[in-house]
Amino acid sequence: MSHNLNPPRRNFYGRSHGKTMRASQKEYLAEDLGPLTLKGVFTEENPERREISLDFAGGKPLWLEIGFGGGEHLVHMAARYPDVHIIGAEPFMNGVAMLLGKIRQAAVGNLSLYPRDVRELFEVLPPACLDKAFLNYPDPWPKARHHRRRFVTQDHLQPLARLMKPGAEFRVATDIPDYVRQTLEEVPPAGFELVKQAGLGAAWEDWFSTRYEQKALREGRDPHYLTFRKL
Ligand SMILES: C[S@@+](CC[C@H](N)C(=O)[O-])C[C@H]1O[C@@H](n2cnc3c(N)ncnc32)[C@H](O)[C@@H]1O
Image (cartoon, rainbow, N blue to C red):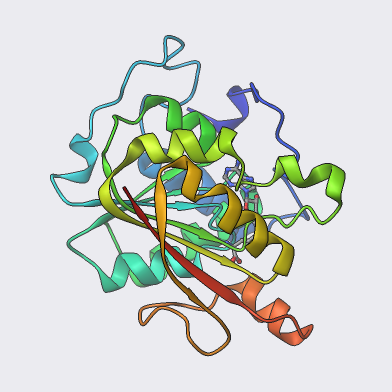
């Protein structure tokens, strides 16, 4: 099914399309996106929002990356952990096309995609199915009146918490000090405890620096790495 057939049902303030894609990227989307896209998540396929089966994961532990951007961290994790199945959600189609190119190069098979708003995926995954979740450099929404659009609000965090197994890890990376503040305030009440807070040079041992992080470092902003555990 084409992603264009699925009109957004929620307020989504990010971008879904950007600059013109290369012919190769259009080819990746045409050939690879369909087979890698999770079945039964688009509202047209599943208007009743029935829970989907996890058969696609083949019984492996299930991880989720929210807003994977160009996909470098997602592909790195899939290659590093072949015994895990990772879902990536990202509505920005230029990023999805970049990821598909990287998947071809790395020849990883333990990935599934949802090329839209992750909140639609939250509706149909079974409770307590996730062993790990990554939120790398979420959109900062710097203006105070836009803070409620940030991912680290209860509207996003509670549906995510419902999907995470007790003990599951939730990692947040951000370069915005006020985003750290809001993350520390909002994530625990959604059912998590803070395990670790680290800064520049102290990322997770298996971290892969993303495009957004590279840009932040070039522009003089420091990374913050927060680790939570689902209670
Ligand atoms: C600042 S970018 C960071 C991208 C990437 N994680 C990185 O570190 O380079 C934030 C990404 O989150 C995505 N995003 C925003 N809201 C989202 C949502 N509701 N569901 C899935 N992805 C979302 C955006 O499209 C964007 O690509």
